Length: 291
Length: 268
Image (cartoon, chains in turn cyan, purple):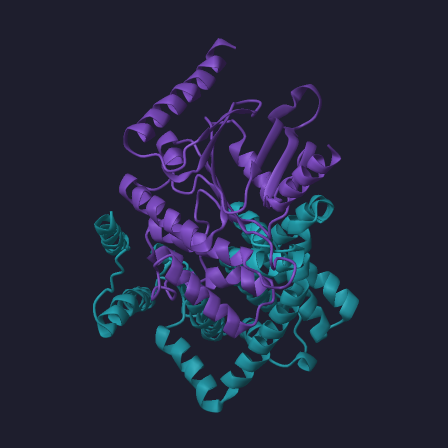
């Protein structure tokens, strides 16, 4: 019998060794970076090439389709004069502040909708409806209420971002496997501890999706608001720059504006949300979703 | 006469019973559509005892365990719980995927407000108990099914050993709801051996739910057979220390009884 005991231990160790999932790494760091960076760079290069050919073929008059070089010159002027810093600062700091206020409103709202049945039935459909209402529809009302002020712009941003973030949190909470809160209760979690230690961390992946969408909505809403509500008092953001391009009938300026708005949107996603999401998913072994 | 009654009472009071059922019933729903899961169940587990609860599907074994764990309340009767908070192990390990193995074990201690250094030490000790020392930094997805279930066991044990006063000095109770049924045969066999070793090392009472007769006889000191819909206690067997032919005989006998219970449903 004692001999069997020794065997049991080694059988167990052998099972552990055999059953442990194998984690693989894909090649060297340089190769991984190349594998990720080359496809998008190739796609952009192809796009610019097609654009150049279309422009050279003169399908459309110059005032409709600018030369890639002209658009680049516009952007380069902004960079050399330092004007680009003002454009970015005005728009991005508005978007960040708007997003932060949205978070403060949306998190308690989402928690209330997910946890309190009456609130869910009452406000849930309203919040979902607001999410599908383009927040640019609020611009006229916001201008009438707040005038051409920052307040009007924040109002539009909030109505764009809050429903997305709140809904993301609700769906994140709804997707928590029911066994986890039960385990939490069996481990001695009360209501508050259950939310803090079990529900919120378990809902994080879904919530991050909501945050990403919330950022996209707040950026879009901001651009729409800046494009419509232009005034010297408001400072010059990317939306105003785009509006100026339209007023001056300068298509290369318009293209430059669109490009810069795109770059900021994608940049924040790539620099902030993508790494955040990847690290959360990786820690939970959801690596197939890691991009 | 009075003296003997008094004596008998003190004796019965001296025997500590972590959990005792008094005519416990549980129904889901109300009125005519109500499903009676448990009906008039009398059961007790003595301190340090290993009791296996056996029954076919739908006999309310898991319901019974949930009642003891406080995850559900009985509709009739009374459960007398004199243990510290029961530790529960479910069929799935249900580890928190965002925490490491050690983090999972520390979770109940964290929620009970145990200081960090003490938590660390306790987690290391429990990892050692389930023979996973050195793997505390692994995430659940990096562990095999059997290892995950061992972490779940360690976490459950951590939840019962809260030394914050109320639980001190009371017998401990471990509730297990078919914890090995999702594992492959050889892992299950090894983990059964592990569980017996841990039971002997900790001296905790165990209420173990299973539908596997062989498992019940191998692990338990006592096997309790439940009938299905509604769940009632049909019979009990004392199977402590059985081996060889006796063990095989007990398994056959309990199997026959279980088959009888199941086939009675075909007639109804």
